Image (cartoon, rainbow, N blue to C red; front, side, top):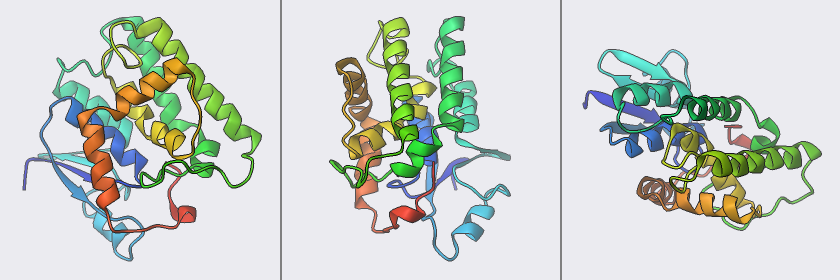
Length: 222
C-alpha cells in the first residue's frame, strides 16, 4: 500500500471528501485513494479501521492519521509549501481561512435542502426553500463577489490562484449547479473556472460512473 492514503466516501455524494481530494490533486501531492461506499451495512466498520473518528475523509501518511477535511487541507499546505494553497498576503490569507472555516461549520439549511448529487443537473427544489436557504445562498454569493473583487485580480479563483478556500467551496458550487441557482456574472465565471479544473472534471466523471444509489433523505449534510 502507498505511504499516503486518502480514505473517502462516494464521490457522487461525499462533499467532505471532495475538499481534501481536490486540494491534494491541485498541490501535486501523490496519494492512493480508498473509496468506502456510504450507508452500507459494513460502512461504519470499514471507516473505523482507518480512524477512530469513524467518518471520512481520512488521510493516512505513514504513521500519521489526519481527519476532518479542513485539517487535511491544512496538512497538505504544510506538505507542499510552494503550492500556494493559502494566499501569500497575510490579510488575504486571514480572510481565506475565515471563509473556509465558515464553510466548514455553517450553511446547514442549504446542505439539508440541496444535497450534493453530481448526477443531477437542472433540478429545482420541489417547494419554495425556507428563508434560511435563500439567506445562505445570498451569503455564499456575497463571499464570492467580495473575494473576486478584493483578492482575485491575479487569476480566476477567489484569491487569484487556486487555494484551500476554493476547495472548501467546490462542493457548494456543485449544489448550486445541480439545483439551477442563478449566479451573477462574476460568480458564474468563478464557478466555471472551478468546474474546468482537470481534477474536478476527473472527480465528476468518477462520481457519475459509481453504481451506488442513495436516497436523498440519507445523504449527509456535508
